[in-house]
Figure 1: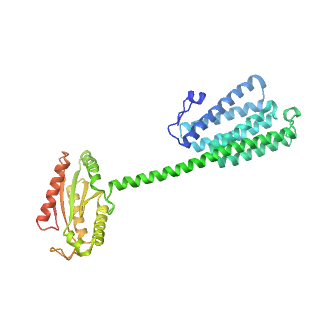
Figure 2: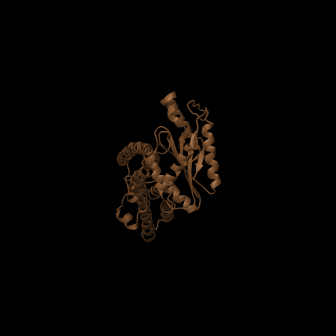
Figure 3: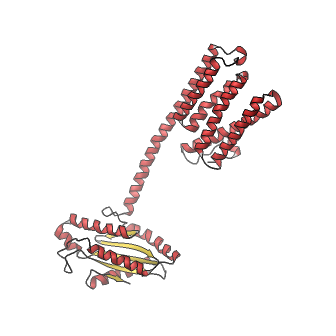
Length: 365
């Protein structure tokens, strides 16, 4: 957030969204800008009319520190440094000016600006602590007679009114700042819960609830992205279909719960080996792989084929062996003509061929 000069002069800020951090950044911009301008005007006025040498050092000190804070805020985008430098500069400058001028020309009026400055820029609690320390110094100095304040008119009743007015101001500013921060914290908590729910709904919409793999719907979204990624890098693109052999008899024999455990176990293998793996439906899975060499693709898919058998899941209904096996059909591309239906058809043909040749094997097309 970097308001322009006209926005700073006329306080015509535009908020992109209801975020309290943006509000604090804009207000800090305004505070630093105004303080720099006031210190510059005070410096020029003092040189031309009052000739107070002590102020000739304080005002430039304030001016350059405000410029440095604005630089940190606007160029470096370091809010914390800008807020702390700005606050502590005003803290020491107001105390120094009050002591030097001995409250002549009602100098202490400027101290009322410190509470809102500190609490808006540093936060309600930190700002409250800094302001209480500031008021302790100012009120102690004024009420217990550092010099002759305001030509001797500074007495106990005026000091009491000054102190009470400050405390009322402090209470009001703290109440507003603190309640605003708490309200935003509640709103932000609701936003975070909403974001978490949206992420959950999004995940549920693109993943299979049982296995956690991507579902058929997400396949058509991911497929072209990976295809053109392989094309840009001049790599091989592979799409494969995996079907568990004799899974229906297994499911009927051992029950659906055991069948689900098998599907989850196979899904974990796919998740380990492939960036994008899908459950197409039932016991049919799919996957996408991109590699620089065709041999890398074949090596990975062959390892997957053996890994399924290595799960040591007994399938006594399988005529080809006592362990769970799978058939895999793979289509590998290097000449990139995008046609999802054709690629899917060729991969499905490879899978059908693997089954027709006796299952428990990998066929490449």
